[in-house]
Image (cartoon, rainbow, N blue to C red):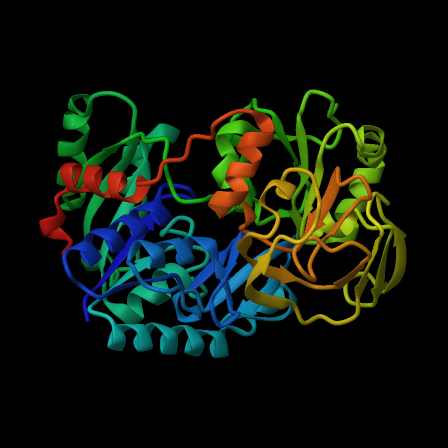
Length: 462
């Protein structure tokens, strides 16, 4: 089956979004199409219907294609924990924490899983749209590069190389990336795309002619800078969020799954652990890749004291790791840090225990049963979400059936439900509490697809 690879000259060049757009365009033309990324390094993940964990970008690419996300679409996920250690997730299951030097030693069996996953998708779908990782021309990694070079060799795709002109140096990065490719990969490159142009593309024409002559590769199109895109994959993208808004989200050092807050992105901003919290109407503590380590960081900068100071005056909400931090106590039985008992922020009458490495990963639908502020307006209604966490929390006042906890006055509450803000009834409750309307682009993928078809020569790709 035909394969198209969307590679980049750098990280964040727009590969994830363009992959999703191609999935959407092909699906609308009647093709059965699936996304694929052999290895993704991301702190933001999604749980499939069968309880498997994959990077959130591949989930949204699947939705763009009109299909359910599948662990084969992202067979290897690395979730960074710091100090060169990542949690290794293979075919949707967390295997272990691994140092990158040890990871390289395990590539033989991992390559087989990647190859099997790709071939299985290729048998099932008419098109597979492959997303590369980072820059395609990482010459120090060619023998280890699962997402770019290895994927190209097992799939023989048409390769598109994307360069981000907003970062500057786009022609040099396109030329350098192409010229450094292995000789067996160069013939697969069918074109370049220049992404995120602010201004008229006429100014680029001399450069486009020159790069086409130098590489004998066509520039297929120039895409304008657009403010809508796929949910962010890593913490670098936090800097692109708004700098004002009534919702303050604590910027934890090991923050994860902050894509939970994409629906309220226009009315929220990230706040340093050192900053004052008085200027916000709602405070959110997001998920963390290492709850206890980030709790210690909060205490180091007295963020816990500032939270206790405002408790009762404005809502404080914890999601997943943030929920665990709000508990009275966290007990690690050797899963993350050896045996350890740590005092939590203490705003919720709950205790969290970490007794096993295995994570809870599942999609859930639950009824709002608690009287916590904001969500009390939708009590009795159902919400959808997904869980990705180690540890179990024992709560005195659950708020989503058996999940979560609230304080006695309802002003502090927490839950394990990721994706909560993607529920229209939850979003409506937050709008009513804040007295504002939150702008969400409902048709963002179709808008991107329309612009792509207008700006890019698809005939050279499809």
